Length: 116
Ligand code: AMP
Image 1 (spheres, helix red, strand yellow):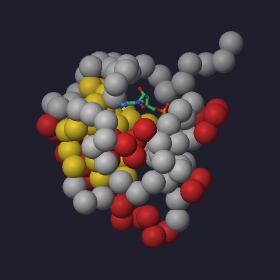
Image 2 (cartoon, rainbow, N blue to C red):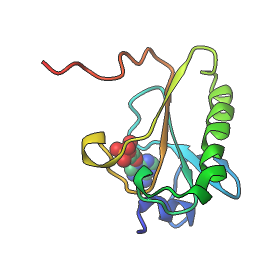
Image 3 (cartoon, protein in one colour):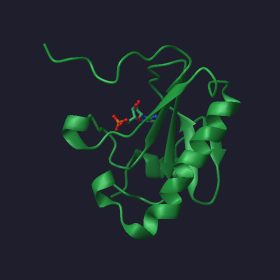
Image 4 (cartoon, protein in one colour):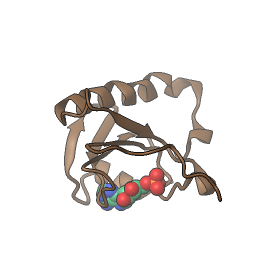
């Protein structure tokens, strides 16, 4: 199903695009939670990781290639960064078009805050 990210891919709404090729688009998150916060998405509409099929293997592998390239360009490859993909409600997914968050530029802390 089409989401706001489909509109960004179609250039119907603006985004701060940092990378684009035939399979993948990357743009700055509109509400960054780290000095570097970029979303890397496949151009194909796939709602969640649960919807991935084997034919998506190369395209989804490209997300990592692009992540490494952007991390270097943004100067966080050596200091470090985190790649995150949220899935469904408990994962905190808000936009149902698979996306990889690239976060860096500060110490990001533990993966999860322990439940009290
Ligand atoms: P998630 O919670 O993993 O689904 O993340 C969705 C992300 O998309 C959030 O970090 C939002 O800030 C971001 N976002 C939503 N709309 C836009 C937009 N138009 N341009 C850039 N980032 C967006």
